[in-house]
Length: 193
Image 1 (cartoon, rainbow, N blue to C red):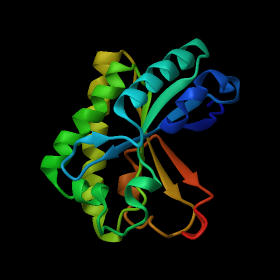
Image 2 (cartoon, rainbow, N blue to C red):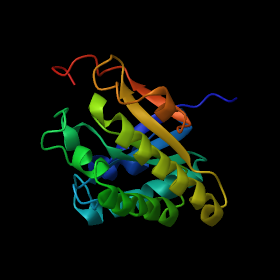
Image 3 (cartoon, helix red, strand yellow):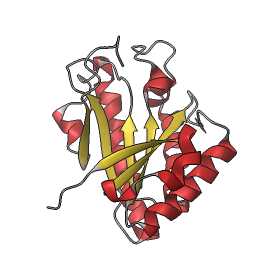
Protein backbone atom coordinates (compact mmCIF):
# COMPACT_ATOMS: atom_id res chain seq x y z
CA UNK A 1 0.00 0.00 0.00
CA UNK A 2 1.03 3.60 -0.47
CA UNK A 3 2.95 5.46 2.23
CA UNK A 4 0.77 7.58 4.51
CA UNK A 5 2.00 10.58 6.46
CA UNK A 6 -0.31 11.89 9.16
CA UNK A 7 -0.03 15.31 10.77
CA UNK A 8 -2.03 16.82 13.60
CA UNK A 9 -3.48 20.33 13.27
CA UNK A 10 -4.64 21.85 16.58
CA UNK A 11 -7.82 23.89 16.78
CA UNK A 12 -5.98 26.71 18.55
CA UNK A 13 -3.89 27.38 15.40
CA UNK A 14 -6.71 27.83 12.88
CA UNK A 15 -5.31 31.20 11.85
CA UNK A 16 -2.49 29.22 10.18
CA UNK A 17 -4.68 27.05 7.93
CA UNK A 18 -3.49 28.86 4.81
CA UNK A 19 0.18 28.59 5.84
CA UNK A 20 0.23 24.83 6.37
CA UNK A 21 2.40 22.83 3.93
CA UNK A 22 -0.22 20.35 2.77
CA UNK A 23 2.18 18.69 0.34
CA UNK A 24 4.05 17.19 3.30
CA UNK A 25 1.16 14.98 4.46
CA UNK A 26 -1.36 12.55 3.04
CA UNK A 27 -3.68 12.89 6.03
CA UNK A 28 -4.37 15.69 8.48
CA UNK A 29 -5.98 15.18 11.90
CA UNK A 30 -7.90 18.13 13.34
CA UNK A 31 -7.49 18.15 17.12
CA UNK A 32 -9.44 18.02 19.41
CA UNK A 33 -13.05 17.24 20.22
CA UNK A 34 -13.28 17.08 24.01
CA UNK A 35 -15.90 14.74 25.50
CA UNK A 36 -17.86 15.72 28.56
CA UNK A 37 -18.94 13.19 31.17
CA UNK A 38 -22.48 13.25 29.74
CA UNK A 39 -21.40 12.63 26.12
CA UNK A 40 -21.62 16.18 24.86
CA UNK A 41 -18.64 17.68 23.08
CA UNK A 42 -16.69 20.82 23.74
CA UNK A 43 -13.44 22.35 22.47
CA UNK A 44 -10.29 24.14 23.67
CA UNK A 45 -11.44 27.19 21.72
CA UNK A 46 -14.83 28.85 21.24
CA UNK A 47 -17.11 26.63 19.15
CA UNK A 48 -17.32 29.27 16.41
CA UNK A 49 -13.50 29.22 16.12
CA UNK A 50 -13.46 25.42 16.08
CA UNK A 51 -16.07 25.10 13.34
CA UNK A 52 -14.79 27.96 11.15
CA UNK A 53 -11.30 26.49 11.44
CA UNK A 54 -12.65 23.07 10.50
CA UNK A 55 -14.48 24.48 7.48
CA UNK A 56 -11.35 26.26 6.26
CA UNK A 57 -9.23 23.18 6.87
CA UNK A 58 -11.73 20.94 5.05
CA UNK A 59 -11.63 23.26 2.05
CA UNK A 60 -7.84 23.38 1.98
CA UNK A 61 -7.49 19.62 2.43
CA UNK A 62 -9.86 18.99 -0.46
CA UNK A 63 -7.95 21.46 -2.66
CA UNK A 64 -4.68 19.67 -1.83
CA UNK A 65 -5.97 16.07 -2.01
CA UNK A 66 -5.28 15.51 1.71
CA UNK A 67 -7.55 13.28 3.78
CA UNK A 68 -9.06 14.97 6.83
CA UNK A 69 -9.65 13.23 10.16
CA UNK A 70 -11.04 14.45 13.47
CA UNK A 71 -9.52 13.52 16.83
CA UNK A 72 -11.22 13.25 20.21
CA UNK A 73 -9.27 13.57 23.41
CA UNK A 74 -5.69 14.69 23.67
CA UNK A 75 -3.65 15.32 26.78
CA UNK A 76 -5.70 18.33 27.84
CA UNK A 77 -8.95 16.45 28.42
CA UNK A 78 -7.62 13.63 30.63
CA UNK A 79 -4.14 14.77 31.68
CA UNK A 80 -3.18 11.19 32.42
CA UNK A 81 -5.42 11.36 35.48
CA UNK A 82 -6.02 7.64 35.72
CA UNK A 83 -9.79 7.93 35.79
CA UNK A 84 -9.97 10.60 38.52
CA UNK A 85 -11.81 13.66 37.21
CA UNK A 86 -11.32 12.33 33.68
CA UNK A 87 -14.41 13.10 31.56
CA UNK A 88 -13.30 10.55 28.95
CA UNK A 89 -13.21 7.81 31.58
CA UNK A 90 -16.65 8.75 32.94
CA UNK A 91 -18.19 8.99 29.45
CA UNK A 92 -16.77 5.68 28.18
CA UNK A 93 -17.97 3.89 31.31
CA UNK A 94 -21.55 5.13 30.79
CA UNK A 95 -23.51 3.52 27.92
CA UNK A 96 -25.97 6.45 27.79
CA UNK A 97 -23.15 8.99 27.51
CA UNK A 98 -21.43 6.92 24.78
CA UNK A 99 -24.73 6.77 22.90
CA UNK A 100 -24.80 10.57 22.97
CA UNK A 101 -21.11 11.17 22.21
CA UNK A 102 -20.77 8.92 19.16
CA UNK A 103 -23.59 10.59 17.13
CA UNK A 104 -22.06 13.98 17.99
CA UNK A 105 -18.77 12.83 16.46
CA UNK A 106 -20.47 11.25 13.44
CA UNK A 107 -22.40 14.47 12.75
CA UNK A 108 -19.13 16.41 12.48
CA UNK A 109 -17.60 13.74 10.23
CA UNK A 110 -20.62 13.73 7.93
CA UNK A 111 -21.18 17.50 7.92
CA UNK A 112 -17.57 18.16 6.89
CA UNK A 113 -17.14 15.10 4.64
CA UNK A 114 -14.24 13.85 6.74
CA UNK A 115 -12.18 10.74 6.08
CA UNK A 116 -11.47 9.40 9.55
CA UNK A 117 -11.79 9.47 13.32
CA UNK A 118 -8.88 9.32 15.77
CA UNK A 119 -9.34 8.27 19.38
CA UNK A 120 -6.68 9.94 21.56
CA UNK A 121 -7.64 9.04 25.13
CA UNK A 122 -4.68 9.75 27.41
CA UNK A 123 -5.05 7.31 29.05
CA UNK A 124 -7.54 4.53 29.77
CA UNK A 125 -6.97 2.40 32.85
CA UNK A 126 -6.23 -1.32 32.48
CA UNK A 127 -9.64 -1.92 34.08
CA UNK A 128 -11.29 0.02 31.24
CA UNK A 129 -10.45 -2.70 28.70
CA UNK A 130 -13.97 -4.13 28.41
CA UNK A 131 -15.80 -0.80 28.19
CA UNK A 132 -13.11 0.55 25.86
CA UNK A 133 -13.67 -2.39 23.52
CA UNK A 134 -17.44 -1.81 23.64
CA UNK A 135 -16.87 1.88 22.87
CA UNK A 136 -14.58 1.03 19.96
CA UNK A 137 -17.10 -1.45 18.54
CA UNK A 138 -19.84 1.21 18.79
CA UNK A 139 -17.61 3.76 17.04
CA UNK A 140 -16.69 1.29 14.29
CA UNK A 141 -20.36 0.45 13.65
CA UNK A 142 -21.25 4.15 13.45
CA UNK A 143 -18.32 4.88 11.11
CA UNK A 144 -19.35 2.00 8.87
CA UNK A 145 -22.88 3.41 8.67
CA UNK A 146 -21.42 6.76 7.56
CA UNK A 147 -20.06 5.04 4.46
CA UNK A 148 -23.59 5.03 3.01
CA UNK A 149 -24.05 8.76 3.62
CA UNK A 150 -20.55 9.85 2.58
CA UNK A 151 -20.05 7.39 -0.26
CA UNK A 152 -16.65 6.43 1.15
CA UNK A 153 -15.17 4.48 4.04
CA UNK A 154 -14.33 6.41 7.18
CA UNK A 155 -11.14 5.17 8.82
CA UNK A 156 -10.68 4.63 12.55
CA UNK A 157 -7.36 5.16 14.33
CA UNK A 158 -6.09 5.38 17.87
CA UNK A 159 -3.18 7.27 19.38
CA UNK A 160 -1.24 5.41 22.06
CA UNK A 161 1.90 6.04 24.08
CA UNK A 162 5.21 4.46 23.07
CA UNK A 163 5.70 2.78 26.44
CA UNK A 164 3.49 0.45 28.45
CA UNK A 165 2.05 3.39 30.40
CA UNK A 166 -1.64 3.80 29.59
CA UNK A 167 -1.75 1.09 26.95
CA UNK A 168 -2.95 -1.99 28.90
CA UNK A 169 -6.63 -1.36 28.05
CA UNK A 170 -5.84 -1.55 24.33
CA UNK A 171 -6.05 -5.32 24.06
CA UNK A 172 -5.50 -7.21 20.82
CA UNK A 173 -9.28 -7.51 20.43
CA UNK A 174 -9.60 -3.69 20.71
CA UNK A 175 -6.87 -3.15 18.13
CA UNK A 176 -8.78 -5.34 15.68
CA UNK A 177 -11.34 -2.54 15.20
CA UNK A 178 -8.91 0.14 14.05
CA UNK A 179 -7.33 0.84 10.68
CA UNK A 180 -4.26 2.58 12.13
CA UNK A 181 -2.40 2.86 15.41
CA UNK A 182 -0.51 6.11 15.86
CA UNK A 183 2.33 5.80 18.35
CA UNK A 184 3.10 8.95 20.30
CA UNK A 185 6.85 8.46 20.54
CA UNK A 186 7.17 11.70 22.49
CA UNK A 187 5.08 10.18 25.27
CA UNK A 188 7.91 8.35 27.01
CA UNK A 189 7.31 9.87 30.44
CA UNK A 190 4.62 12.04 31.93
CA UNK A 191 7.12 14.68 33.03
CA UNK A 192 8.07 15.78 29.52
CA UNK A 193 4.77 15.36 27.69
